[in-house]
Amino acid sequence: MHYVVMDLEWNNTYCKRLGGFINEIIEIGAVKLDENLKTLDTFSEFVKPQISRKLQGRVKRLTNLTNEEINTGDFFQDVIEQFGDWIGEEPTTVLTWADGDIRTLISNYRYYFGTSVLPFAGRYVDLQKYCQSFIDVPSSQQIGLSTAAEQLGINPDLYSHHRALDDSVLSADCLRKVFHPEKLAAYTKKCDAQFYHRLEFKPHAISNINHPLVDKSLLECKCIKCGETAVRQTDWKYSNQYFRADFKCENCGALLRYAIRFKKYYDHLDIRHTTSEIDENDNKKRKRHYYKPKRKASVKNKQ
Ligand SMILES: [Zn+2]
Image (cartoon, rainbow, N blue to C red; front, side, top):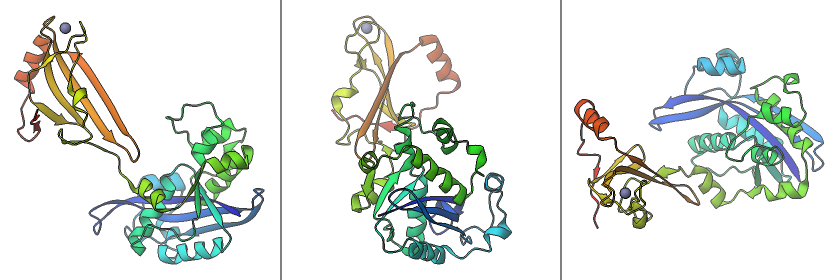
């Protein structure tokens, strides 16, 4: 069994064919390790861009790469074939620092080959998640590679940054600091259909109030002053991911603005809501100066 710790550099660019932006890969770097994390080989290749011939200024500054340099590389289709040959037949776990790189690799692979399935990846580990479990930071916070390296007692200044091979080497050294095969196994995912589906799933807020995932009991607003159930005064409006409506508490007279968001992730629904008291003077002012009702944003609530 081999581990391949890989890192990519990419250029975010508009793609006519997709009608949207894509992170076009410009460099692939990787370190191949045996099951005791001994380095067996390294891989470092430029990828000659085909979607955008011009690197963004930000990418140039970050990587110190020039258009001339990356144009010495082969096309993605060829480099990825070389990469697959380099990985070889040995069962391999691919590791990247956070899942941005694997997502980008999949999106480029799909763009050129029409399929998301990476033939060389049997198993995958998000190395950032794994390393972070050894560092005292909340899991909701994603720490960068240099910060993690420092926390693990590595001096990141000894490595050059934001080049694919150097970042792979630094990531591999982070893994060495916290290598426990059994714990790593718990973070290892099989690259099956569900794996790709999960990575390609785009979290989105639900915009139709009659959607079956919208729990109607949560569309009730409790008065923040007295706790009684308030009565809705306006239609539901959907804006900025939230359903919004104004309520009035018949018990204490408070005017309330209630907003609730249902956001669908691959395997869970995230629900957030806020209630605030409406300042009537403020409301009048706002209506006079800024408030322009839009028919489109109005959501009818069938009860
Ligand atoms: Zn009240």
